Image 1 (cartoon, rainbow over the protein chains, first blue to last red):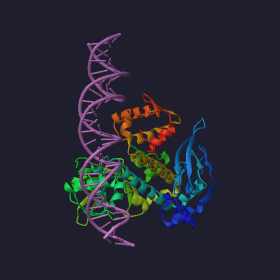
Image 2: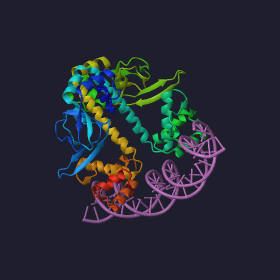
Image 3: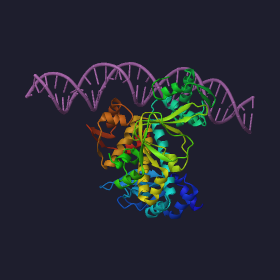
Length: 226
Length: 226
DNA sequence: CGGCTGATTGAATCAGATCAACTGCTGTGG
DNA sequence: CCACAGCAGTTGATCTGATTCAATCAGCCG
Protein backbone atom coordinates (compact mmCIF):
# COMPACT_ATOMS: atom_id res chain seq x y z
CA UNK A 1 0.00 0.00 0.00
CA UNK A 2 1.42 3.37 -0.97
CA UNK A 3 1.32 6.47 1.15
CA UNK A 4 -1.32 8.02 -1.06
CA UNK A 5 -3.59 5.09 -0.47
CA UNK A 6 -3.11 5.56 3.24
CA UNK A 7 -4.49 9.05 3.17
CA UNK A 8 -7.28 7.92 0.89
CA UNK A 9 -8.21 5.23 3.39
CA UNK A 10 -9.79 8.02 5.42
CA UNK A 11 -13.23 8.85 4.01
CA UNK A 12 -12.73 12.52 4.63
CA UNK A 13 -9.82 12.73 2.18
CA UNK A 14 -11.33 10.42 -0.35
CA UNK A 15 -12.14 12.53 -3.37
CA UNK A 16 -9.01 14.66 -3.19
CA UNK A 17 -7.13 14.87 -6.49
CA UNK A 18 -3.97 12.74 -6.70
CA UNK A 19 -1.57 15.64 -6.36
CA UNK A 20 -3.17 16.82 -3.16
CA UNK A 21 -3.51 13.37 -1.68
CA UNK A 22 0.18 12.86 -2.34
CA UNK A 23 1.06 16.18 -0.76
CA UNK A 24 -0.92 15.34 2.34
CA UNK A 25 0.70 11.94 2.52
CA UNK A 26 4.07 13.61 2.71
CA UNK A 27 3.27 15.21 6.04
CA UNK A 28 1.17 12.38 7.45
CA UNK A 29 2.55 9.45 9.32
CA UNK A 30 1.11 6.32 10.82
CA UNK A 31 1.15 5.27 14.45
CA UNK A 32 0.34 2.07 16.22
CA UNK A 33 -1.84 2.29 19.30
CA UNK A 34 -2.07 -0.89 21.36
CA UNK A 35 -5.35 -1.65 23.08
CA UNK A 36 -6.00 0.80 25.88
CA UNK A 37 -3.36 3.31 24.77
CA UNK A 38 -4.41 6.91 25.37
CA UNK A 39 -4.06 8.89 22.15
CA UNK A 40 -4.70 12.34 23.54
CA UNK A 41 -6.30 13.78 26.62
CA UNK A 42 -9.04 16.34 27.06
CA UNK A 43 -7.63 19.84 27.49
CA UNK A 44 -4.33 19.26 25.71
CA UNK A 45 -3.54 21.63 22.90
CA UNK A 46 -4.67 20.07 19.60
CA UNK A 47 -1.40 19.02 17.99
CA UNK A 48 -2.88 17.27 15.00
CA UNK A 49 -5.72 15.28 13.61
CA UNK A 50 -6.15 11.55 13.40
CA UNK A 51 -7.75 8.97 11.19
CA UNK A 52 -8.47 5.36 12.08
CA UNK A 53 -6.80 2.95 9.67
CA UNK A 54 -7.36 -0.25 11.63
CA UNK A 55 -8.98 -1.07 14.93
CA UNK A 56 -11.32 1.09 16.93
CA UNK A 57 -10.97 4.24 18.98
CA UNK A 58 -13.21 5.65 21.67
CA UNK A 59 -13.81 9.30 22.34
CA UNK A 60 -14.82 9.94 25.93
CA UNK A 61 -15.14 12.58 28.58
CA UNK A 62 -13.96 11.93 32.10
CA UNK A 63 -16.30 13.47 34.63
CA UNK A 64 -14.75 15.19 37.67
CA UNK A 65 -15.73 12.14 39.70
CA UNK A 66 -13.69 10.00 37.34
CA UNK A 67 -16.61 8.36 35.61
CA UNK A 68 -16.14 7.83 31.90
CA UNK A 69 -18.81 8.95 29.47
CA UNK A 70 -18.22 7.46 26.04
CA UNK A 71 -19.27 9.87 23.34
CA UNK A 72 -18.37 7.88 20.29
CA UNK A 73 -16.70 4.74 19.02
CA UNK A 74 -14.88 5.16 15.73
CA UNK A 75 -13.85 2.54 13.20
CA UNK A 76 -11.62 2.36 10.13
CA UNK A 77 -11.96 5.26 7.70
CA UNK A 78 -13.16 7.73 10.28
CA UNK A 79 -11.43 11.01 11.03
CA UNK A 80 -11.34 12.55 14.48
CA UNK A 81 -10.11 15.66 16.26
CA UNK A 82 -10.25 17.64 13.04
CA UNK A 83 -12.52 20.30 14.50
CA UNK A 84 -10.23 21.43 17.33
CA UNK A 85 -7.25 21.24 14.97
CA UNK A 86 -8.87 23.46 12.35
CA UNK A 87 -10.24 25.81 14.96
CA UNK A 88 -6.98 25.98 16.89
CA UNK A 89 -8.55 24.84 20.13
CA UNK A 90 -7.59 22.20 22.62
CA UNK A 91 -8.94 18.66 22.43
CA UNK A 92 -12.44 18.66 23.91
CA UNK A 93 -12.35 15.02 24.96
CA UNK A 94 -10.01 12.13 25.51
CA UNK A 95 -9.28 9.50 22.88
CA UNK A 96 -8.03 5.97 23.49
CA UNK A 97 -7.63 2.81 21.46
CA UNK A 98 -10.27 0.16 22.08
CA UNK A 99 -8.51 -2.47 19.98
CA UNK A 100 -4.94 -2.68 18.81
CA UNK A 101 -5.13 0.04 16.20
CA UNK A 102 -3.25 1.77 13.45
CA UNK A 103 -3.77 5.49 13.09
CA UNK A 104 -2.99 8.18 10.59
CA UNK A 105 -1.65 11.36 12.14
CA UNK A 106 -1.36 14.76 10.49
CA UNK A 107 0.41 17.43 12.55
CA UNK A 108 -1.39 20.75 12.72
CA UNK A 109 1.71 22.81 12.07
CA UNK A 110 2.72 21.00 8.91
CA UNK A 111 -0.87 20.95 7.71
CA UNK A 112 -1.21 24.68 8.13
CA UNK A 113 2.09 25.34 6.35
CA UNK A 114 0.98 23.18 3.49
CA UNK A 115 -2.31 25.06 3.16
CA UNK A 116 -0.32 28.29 2.95
CA UNK A 117 1.74 26.98 0.05
CA UNK A 118 -1.01 25.21 -1.82
CA UNK A 119 -4.31 27.05 -2.08
CA UNK A 120 -5.69 24.26 -4.25
CA UNK A 121 -5.39 21.85 -1.38
CA UNK A 122 -7.51 24.18 0.70
CA UNK A 123 -9.98 24.57 -2.15
CA UNK A 124 -10.11 20.83 -2.62
CA UNK A 125 -10.90 20.21 1.01
CA UNK A 126 -13.47 22.99 1.06
CA UNK A 127 -15.05 21.40 -2.01
CA UNK A 128 -15.26 18.01 -0.34
CA UNK A 129 -16.73 19.44 2.83
CA UNK A 130 -19.26 21.66 1.17
CA UNK A 131 -20.38 18.90 -1.16
CA UNK A 132 -20.89 16.62 1.78
CA UNK A 133 -22.69 19.35 3.67
CA UNK A 134 -25.16 19.74 0.81
CA UNK A 135 -25.72 15.99 0.71
CA UNK A 136 -26.36 15.92 4.43
CA UNK A 137 -28.72 18.86 4.24
CA UNK A 138 -30.72 17.07 1.61
CA UNK A 139 -30.79 13.93 3.67
CA UNK A 140 -32.02 15.82 6.71
CA UNK A 141 -34.72 17.44 4.67
CA UNK A 142 -35.78 14.04 3.36
CA UNK A 143 -35.73 12.41 6.76
CA UNK A 144 -37.87 15.06 8.32
CA UNK A 145 -40.72 14.23 5.97
CA UNK A 146 -42.75 11.97 8.17
CA UNK A 147 -44.99 10.05 5.79
CA UNK A 148 -43.74 7.57 3.27
CA UNK A 149 -45.63 9.06 0.29
CA UNK A 150 -43.98 12.43 0.99
CA UNK A 151 -40.52 10.90 1.09
CA UNK A 152 -41.11 8.84 -2.03
CA UNK A 153 -42.47 11.81 -3.95
CA UNK A 154 -39.48 13.91 -2.91
CA UNK A 155 -37.13 11.17 -4.00
CA UNK A 156 -38.78 10.78 -7.38
CA UNK A 157 -38.58 14.52 -7.97
CA UNK A 158 -34.91 14.42 -7.07
CA UNK A 159 -34.27 11.64 -9.57
CA UNK A 160 -36.21 13.55 -12.16
CA UNK A 161 -33.91 16.51 -11.64
CA UNK A 162 -30.81 14.36 -11.94
CA UNK A 163 -31.87 12.33 -14.92
CA UNK A 164 -33.47 15.26 -16.64
CA UNK A 165 -36.34 13.23 -18.01
CA UNK A 166 -39.80 12.14 -16.98
CA UNK A 167 -38.85 8.54 -17.51
CA UNK A 168 -36.81 7.39 -14.55
CA UNK A 169 -34.75 4.29 -13.99
CA UNK A 170 -34.73 3.22 -10.38
CA UNK A 171 -31.04 2.44 -10.12
CA UNK A 172 -31.71 0.44 -6.97
CA UNK A 173 -33.73 -2.73 -6.39
CA UNK A 174 -37.01 -1.79 -4.75
CA UNK A 175 -36.06 -3.43 -1.49
CA UNK A 176 -32.98 -1.22 -1.23
CA UNK A 177 -34.93 1.83 -2.23
CA UNK A 178 -37.36 1.08 0.57
CA UNK A 179 -34.48 1.02 3.04
CA UNK A 180 -33.13 4.28 1.63
CA UNK A 181 -36.52 5.88 2.22
CA UNK A 182 -36.63 4.50 5.73
CA UNK A 183 -39.40 2.01 5.14
CA UNK A 184 -39.91 -1.60 4.04
CA UNK A 185 -40.58 -3.17 0.64
CA UNK A 186 -44.23 -3.94 1.40
CA UNK A 187 -45.05 -0.35 2.16
CA UNK A 188 -43.12 0.95 -0.83
CA UNK A 189 -45.00 -1.43 -3.06
CA UNK A 190 -48.35 -0.23 -1.76
CA UNK A 191 -47.46 3.43 -2.05
CA UNK A 192 -46.18 3.05 -5.60
CA UNK A 193 -49.42 1.35 -6.48
CA UNK A 194 -51.52 4.09 -4.93
CA UNK A 195 -49.50 6.79 -6.69
CA UNK A 196 -50.00 5.00 -9.97
CA UNK A 197 -53.74 4.63 -9.35
CA UNK A 198 -53.99 8.31 -8.52
CA UNK A 199 -52.32 9.14 -11.82
CA UNK A 200 -49.13 10.71 -10.53
CA UNK A 201 -46.83 8.12 -12.05
CA UNK A 202 -46.73 5.01 -14.16
CA UNK A 203 -44.72 2.02 -13.01
CA UNK A 204 -43.23 -0.65 -15.26
CA UNK A 205 -40.84 -2.77 -13.25
CA UNK A 206 -37.89 -0.60 -12.29
CA UNK A 207 -38.94 2.08 -14.76
CA UNK A 208 -41.08 4.87 -13.35
CA UNK A 209 -42.61 7.58 -15.50
CA UNK A 210 -43.61 10.84 -13.90
CA UNK A 211 -47.02 11.86 -15.21
CA UNK A 212 -47.80 14.80 -12.93
CA UNK A 213 -44.81 16.73 -11.63
CA UNK A 214 -46.88 19.36 -9.87
CA UNK A 215 -48.99 16.73 -8.19
CA UNK A 216 -45.89 14.93 -6.95
CA UNK A 217 -44.53 18.20 -5.70
CA UNK A 218 -47.75 18.83 -3.80
CA UNK A 219 -47.49 15.35 -2.31
CA UNK A 220 -43.89 15.93 -1.26
CA UNK A 221 -44.88 19.07 0.58
CA UNK A 222 -47.80 17.37 2.25
CA UNK A 223 -50.28 19.66 0.52
CA UNK A 224 -52.06 16.67 -0.90
CA UNK A 225 -52.37 13.13 0.28
CA UNK A 226 -52.88 9.81 -1.34
CA UNK B 1 -23.94 48.39 7.73
CA UNK B 2 -20.23 47.78 7.38
CA UNK B 3 -18.61 45.48 4.89
CA UNK B 4 -17.80 42.94 7.59
CA UNK B 5 -21.46 42.73 8.51
CA UNK B 6 -22.23 42.06 4.88
CA UNK B 7 -20.09 38.97 4.79
CA UNK B 8 -21.48 37.90 8.13
CA UNK B 9 -25.00 38.20 6.75
CA UNK B 10 -24.31 34.92 4.98
CA UNK B 11 -24.77 32.01 7.38
CA UNK B 12 -21.85 30.16 5.90
CA UNK B 13 -19.37 32.83 6.99
CA UNK B 14 -20.96 33.48 10.30
CA UNK B 15 -18.56 32.24 12.90
CA UNK B 16 -15.43 33.44 11.15
CA UNK B 17 -13.11 35.49 13.39
CA UNK B 18 -13.22 39.26 12.79
CA UNK B 19 -9.88 39.42 11.00
CA UNK B 20 -10.92 36.82 8.48
CA UNK B 21 -14.37 38.23 7.95
CA UNK B 22 -12.76 41.59 7.25
CA UNK B 23 -10.28 40.05 4.83
CA UNK B 24 -13.06 38.32 2.94
CA UNK B 25 -15.06 41.53 2.82
CA UNK B 26 -12.17 43.19 1.06
CA UNK B 27 -12.54 40.95 -1.96
CA UNK B 28 -16.33 40.64 -1.89
CA UNK B 29 -18.69 43.05 -3.53
CA UNK B 30 -22.42 43.39 -3.73
CA UNK B 31 -24.60 43.29 -6.81
CA UNK B 32 -28.20 44.11 -7.49
CA UNK B 33 -30.22 41.65 -9.48
CA UNK B 34 -33.64 42.86 -10.64
CA UNK B 35 -36.46 40.35 -10.80
CA UNK B 36 -35.87 37.84 -13.55
CA UNK B 37 -32.20 38.70 -14.07
CA UNK B 38 -30.08 35.67 -14.89
CA UNK B 39 -27.14 35.47 -12.51
CA UNK B 40 -25.23 32.68 -14.20
CA UNK B 41 -26.01 29.95 -16.65
CA UNK B 42 -25.46 26.22 -16.50
CA UNK B 43 -22.16 25.22 -18.10
CA UNK B 44 -20.37 28.55 -17.66
CA UNK B 45 -17.07 28.38 -15.88
CA UNK B 46 -17.60 29.08 -12.17
CA UNK B 47 -16.26 32.59 -11.74
CA UNK B 48 -17.23 33.07 -8.15
CA UNK B 49 -19.66 32.24 -5.40
CA UNK B 50 -22.75 34.12 -4.33
CA UNK B 51 -24.73 34.79 -1.22
CA UNK B 52 -28.28 36.12 -1.04
CA UNK B 53 -28.49 39.34 0.98
CA UNK B 54 -32.03 40.33 0.05
CA UNK B 55 -34.69 38.84 -2.15
CA UNK B 56 -34.85 35.32 -3.49
CA UNK B 57 -32.95 33.36 -6.10
CA UNK B 58 -33.93 30.23 -7.95
CA UNK B 59 -31.55 27.50 -9.04
CA UNK B 60 -32.88 25.57 -12.02
CA UNK B 61 -31.92 23.25 -14.79
CA UNK B 62 -33.17 23.82 -18.31
CA UNK B 63 -33.95 20.55 -20.02
CA UNK B 64 -32.98 20.16 -23.69
CA UNK B 65 -36.64 20.68 -24.56
CA UNK B 66 -36.52 24.02 -22.76
CA UNK B 67 -38.59 22.99 -19.77
CA UNK B 68 -37.41 24.47 -16.52
CA UNK B 69 -36.90 22.23 -13.51
CA UNK B 70 -36.53 24.29 -10.35
CA UNK B 71 -34.11 22.65 -7.96
CA UNK B 72 -34.13 25.14 -5.16
CA UNK B 73 -35.34 28.54 -4.05
CA UNK B 74 -32.89 30.42 -1.85
CA UNK B 75 -33.54 33.26 0.54
CA UNK B 76 -31.44 35.77 2.51
CA UNK B 77 -28.40 34.34 4.26
CA UNK B 78 -27.98 31.42 1.91
CA UNK B 79 -24.83 30.74 -0.08
CA UNK B 80 -24.85 29.22 -3.53
CA UNK B 81 -22.46 28.02 -6.22
CA UNK B 82 -19.75 27.42 -3.63
CA UNK B 83 -19.27 23.79 -4.61
CA UNK B 84 -18.35 24.37 -8.26
CA UNK B 85 -16.18 27.31 -7.23
CA UNK B 86 -14.22 25.30 -4.68
CA UNK B 87 -14.01 22.32 -6.99
CA UNK B 88 -13.00 24.41 -9.99
CA UNK B 89 -15.87 23.16 -12.11
CA UNK B 90 -18.44 24.91 -14.19
CA UNK B 91 -21.82 25.93 -12.82
CA UNK B 92 -24.06 22.85 -12.82
CA UNK B 93 -27.31 24.80 -13.08
CA UNK B 94 -28.68 28.20 -13.91
CA UNK B 95 -29.44 30.85 -11.30
CA UNK B 96 -31.86 33.73 -11.63
CA UNK B 97 -33.40 36.30 -9.32
CA UNK B 98 -37.01 35.62 -8.35
CA UNK B 99 -37.47 38.96 -6.61
CA UNK B 100 -35.48 42.14 -6.88
CA UNK B 101 -32.43 40.97 -4.99
CA UNK B 102 -29.14 42.02 -3.55
CA UNK B 103 -26.30 39.54 -3.77
CA UNK B 104 -22.85 39.14 -2.33
CA UNK B 105 -20.26 38.03 -4.86
CA UNK B 106 -16.80 36.64 -4.14
CA UNK B 107 -14.61 36.07 -7.21
CA UNK B 108 -12.91 32.69 -7.33
CA UNK B 109 -9.54 34.08 -8.34
CA UNK B 110 -9.30 36.58 -5.48
CA UNK B 111 -10.61 34.02 -3.03
CA UNK B 112 -7.98 31.51 -4.04
CA UNK B 113 -5.20 34.09 -3.79
CA UNK B 114 -6.38 35.05 -0.36
CA UNK B 115 -6.34 31.45 0.80
CA UNK B 116 -2.74 31.20 -0.38
CA UNK B 117 -1.69 34.15 1.71
CA UNK B 118 -3.71 33.39 4.79
CA UNK B 119 -3.73 29.78 5.91
CA UNK B 120 -5.77 30.74 8.95
CA UNK B 121 -8.63 31.78 6.73
CA UNK B 122 -8.58 28.33 5.19
CA UNK B 123 -8.37 26.73 8.62
CA UNK B 124 -11.22 28.89 9.84
CA UNK B 125 -13.47 27.89 6.99
CA UNK B 126 -12.51 24.25 7.36
CA UNK B 127 -13.36 24.53 11.04
CA UNK B 128 -16.78 25.99 10.32
CA UNK B 129 -17.57 23.38 7.72
CA UNK B 130 -16.38 20.42 9.72
CA UNK B 131 -18.22 21.60 12.81
CA UNK B 132 -21.38 21.93 10.80
CA UNK B 133 -20.81 18.54 9.23
CA UNK B 134 -20.58 16.94 12.65
CA UNK B 135 -23.77 18.66 13.75
CA UNK B 136 -25.56 17.45 10.66
CA UNK B 137 -24.26 13.93 11.11
CA UNK B 138 -25.59 13.92 14.63
CA UNK B 139 -28.93 15.23 13.46
CA UNK B 140 -29.17 12.55 10.80
CA UNK B 141 -28.35 9.90 13.33
CA UNK B 142 -31.06 11.23 15.62
CA UNK B 143 -33.63 11.50 12.85
CA UNK B 144 -33.07 7.98 11.67
CA UNK B 145 -34.13 6.62 15.03
CA UNK B 146 -37.71 5.82 14.24
CA UNK B 147 -39.41 5.53 17.60
CA UNK B 148 -39.90 8.39 19.98
CA UNK B 149 -38.47 6.60 23.04
CA UNK B 150 -35.27 5.94 21.10
CA UNK B 151 -34.92 9.56 20.10
CA UNK B 152 -35.69 10.81 23.58
CA UNK B 153 -33.22 8.40 25.18
CA UNK B 154 -30.53 9.46 22.72
CA UNK B 155 -31.24 13.10 23.46
CA UNK B 156 -31.05 12.61 27.20
CA UNK B 157 -27.74 10.80 26.84
CA UNK B 158 -26.45 13.66 24.74
CA UNK B 159 -27.45 16.19 27.37
CA UNK B 160 -25.86 14.02 30.00
CA UNK B 161 -22.60 14.13 28.06
CA UNK B 162 -22.77 17.90 27.71
CA UNK B 163 -23.79 18.72 31.24
CA UNK B 164 -21.55 16.08 32.72
CA UNK B 165 -23.97 15.16 35.45
CA UNK B 166 -26.85 12.78 36.00
CA UNK B 167 -29.10 15.67 36.92
CA UNK B 168 -30.18 17.42 33.75
CA UNK B 169 -31.90 20.70 33.16
CA UNK B 170 -34.08 20.62 30.10
CA UNK B 171 -33.05 23.97 28.70
CA UNK B 172 -36.14 24.00 26.52
CA UNK B 173 -39.85 24.03 27.43
CA UNK B 174 -41.25 20.56 26.92
CA UNK B 175 -43.36 21.65 23.99
CA UNK B 176 -40.26 22.84 22.15
CA UNK B 177 -38.36 19.74 23.08
CA UNK B 178 -41.15 17.68 21.58
CA UNK B 179 -40.79 19.57 18.32
CA UNK B 180 -37.03 19.10 18.39
CA UNK B 181 -37.53 15.37 18.73
CA UNK B 182 -40.03 15.38 15.89
CA UNK B 183 -43.09 14.63 17.97
CA UNK B 184 -45.81 16.45 19.92
CA UNK B 185 -46.09 17.43 23.59
CA UNK B 186 -48.69 14.79 24.38
CA UNK B 187 -46.49 11.96 23.20
CA UNK B 188 -43.41 13.36 24.93
CA UNK B 189 -45.35 13.57 28.15
CA UNK B 190 -46.44 9.96 27.92
CA UNK B 191 -43.00 8.68 27.06
CA UNK B 192 -41.37 10.58 29.91
CA UNK B 193 -43.91 9.07 32.23
CA UNK B 194 -43.26 5.57 30.97
CA UNK B 195 -39.52 6.01 31.27
CA UNK B 196 -39.96 7.21 34.83
CA UNK B 197 -42.22 4.27 35.66
CA UNK B 198 -39.69 1.89 34.19
CA UNK B 199 -37.03 3.38 36.43
CA UNK B 200 -34.76 4.85 33.78
CA UNK B 201 -35.18 8.43 34.90
CA UNK B 202 -36.84 10.65 37.45
CA UNK B 203 -38.74 13.72 36.34
CA UNK B 204 -39.35 16.84 38.43
CA UNK B 205 -40.67 19.58 36.20
CA UNK B 206 -37.92 20.55 33.81
CA UNK B 207 -35.34 18.68 35.85
CA UNK B 208 -34.62 15.13 34.75
CA UNK B 209 -32.38 12.78 36.66
CA UNK B 210 -30.83 9.85 34.86
CA UNK B 211 -31.11 6.79 37.04
CA UNK B 212 -29.96 4.10 34.61
CA UNK B 213 -27.51 5.20 31.95
CA UNK B 214 -27.00 1.73 30.51
CA UNK B 215 -30.73 1.18 30.32
CA UNK B 216 -31.19 4.46 28.47
CA UNK B 217 -28.40 3.51 26.15
CA UNK B 218 -30.09 0.20 25.43
CA UNK B 219 -33.34 2.07 24.73
CA UNK B 220 -31.57 4.48 22.37
CA UNK B 221 -30.19 1.59 20.38
CA UNK B 222 -33.53 -0.17 20.25
CA UNK B 223 -32.21 -3.11 22.23
CA UNK B 224 -34.93 -2.64 24.78
CA UNK B 225 -38.36 -1.11 24.56
CA UNK B 226 -40.67 0.60 26.94
C1' DC C 1 -39.06 -28.70 -13.90
C1' DG C 2 -37.96 -27.42 -9.10
C1' DG C 3 -36.02 -23.91 -6.17
C1' DC C 4 -34.38 -19.40 -5.17
C1' DT C 5 -34.93 -14.34 -4.77
C1' DG C 6 -37.47 -10.03 -5.28
C1' DA C 7 -41.96 -8.16 -5.42
C1' DT C 8 -46.77 -8.06 -4.30
C1' DT C 9 -51.11 -8.59 -1.68
C1' DG C 10 -54.00 -9.33 2.41
C1' DA C 11 -55.08 -9.33 7.48
C1' DA C 12 -53.82 -8.21 12.11
C1' DT C 13 -51.44 -5.19 15.10
C1' DC C 14 -49.07 -1.20 16.95
C1' DA C 15 -47.04 3.38 17.69
C1' DG C 16 -48.03 7.86 17.45
C1' DA C 17 -51.06 11.71 16.01
C1' DT C 18 -55.29 13.91 16.73
C1' DC C 19 -59.09 15.63 19.27
C1' DA C 20 -60.94 16.94 23.49
C1' DA C 21 -61.13 17.62 28.32
C1' DC C 22 -58.80 18.76 32.51
C1' DT C 23 -55.02 20.35 35.84
C1' DG C 24 -52.11 23.58 37.75
C1' DC C 25 -49.38 27.49 37.61
C1' DT C 26 -48.60 32.50 36.85
C1' DG C 27 -49.58 37.00 36.28
C1' DT C 28 -52.77 40.80 36.04
C1' DG C 29 -56.53 43.81 37.05
C1' DG C 30 -60.47 44.86 39.85
C1' DC D 1 -55.80 39.95 48.05
C1' DC D 2 -58.67 37.34 45.36
C1' DA D 3 -60.58 35.99 40.77
C1' DC D 4 -59.99 34.76 36.60
C1' DA D 5 -57.71 34.67 32.01
C1' DG D 6 -54.15 32.31 29.73
C1' DC D 7 -50.82 28.98 28.76
C1' DA D 8 -47.86 24.73 29.48
C1' DG D 9 -48.43 20.32 30.57
C1' DT D 10 -50.99 16.11 31.41
C1' DT D 11 -54.46 12.46 30.64
C1' DG D 12 -57.94 9.79 28.14
C1' DA D 13 -60.39 8.10 23.84
C1' DT D 14 -60.09 7.43 19.17
C1' DC D 15 -58.17 7.23 14.52
C1' DT D 16 -54.70 6.41 11.01
C1' DG D 17 -50.47 5.19 8.69
C1' DA D 18 -47.06 1.94 8.73
C1' DT D 19 -45.00 -2.34 10.26
C1' DT D 20 -45.46 -7.16 10.99
C1' DC D 21 -46.72 -11.69 9.74
C1' DA D 22 -48.16 -14.75 6.31
C1' DA D 23 -49.26 -16.23 1.84
C1' DT D 24 -48.76 -15.85 -3.01
C1' DC D 25 -46.74 -14.57 -7.41
C1' DA D 26 -43.22 -13.62 -11.10
C1' DG D 27 -38.98 -14.14 -13.01
C1' DC D 28 -34.47 -16.55 -13.40
C1' DC D 29 -30.90 -19.99 -13.15
C1' DG D 30 -29.23 -24.55 -12.60
